[in-house]
Image (cartoon, rainbow, N blue to C red; front, side, top):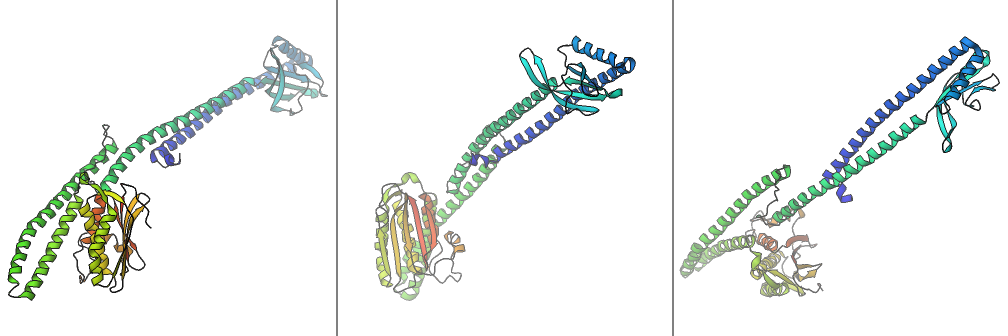
Length: 454
């Protein structure tokens, strides 16, 4: 219910239901007071008229005529709703169908009083509108009307109002629940498609229904935007791939010719060959990134990730020893589904970065691989300068180098390739502070049983 209340559709439906209920309550209240007030005014007008008539009887024939008239009306209408009582100045009853003068009666004026009436089922308590009137000589006259019909009308209004209010609230909540679930289902489908797009699956699209409502129009606009983005991304990949392929062959031929010319001037030719090798490496990395971004998971196979990491560490162990660094591995068996060559290249890039930025002789680079919470994790931690928190996202973009003077080696493609490989395998690359240094964490979904990191 808490999650349902967070939906705008349910809140709006509940708000409309509340507003409709308040409007209905105001209308019923106005109808109640206009109807009940009219009946009450008519009752009091009838009493006034009867008091006036009896007063005229008293003026014309005196007390005896008035008492006779009251006895006649009381006897003529035994089941009447009228109430009469004529008393002496000492409140002794002279005529009427009331047994005694009410204590709540004023000297002159209207009031309400309880009465006991005898019906076919026995005596019942009711209320009555009444008016007292003082005659000359101190005699007092009371005329009233049973208000049971008015009370019944009041109860009918109150009961009907409660039922209408309850039905309105229930109908509003049920309508809100229905609309919320309908909207939530469409939002959930759109969110699922959006998550796929955010994960790099640019061929995913938002669902479009047959109604053509505002959701469908919005989904159509987003899908058109994604069509354009996909075409641009595909064009960029094709261009990158084509340029890389087209340049690799002439560079290879140029390197071969430089090797032949190196015999005459080894120093100059050696520098030229290094530049060619650097250009070739950039092209190779661009090709690998394009391959990772356009990778097909259907070609994946079960891979022992700890073995891939172990092979990479073994490959870089001589480099670490030449630089008098320590490269330590802590490994647990863990299996994932993926492409071995791309995973090996990604781990090699992390190791290459760590060796490049470690402080030098005596530095230690710790590598671990294992599984934790259903996720395979590869951690490469160095003690170098690290990366500032605000630059960790930017450093995974292509050709981004934090060394603005560009004195360090590399073209700024290493971490871009690692990130592309991680996303291809539905994983992630996290760059954290190693205090000091950088802690690079690769995470992938586990496809087999694994032992926790020791």
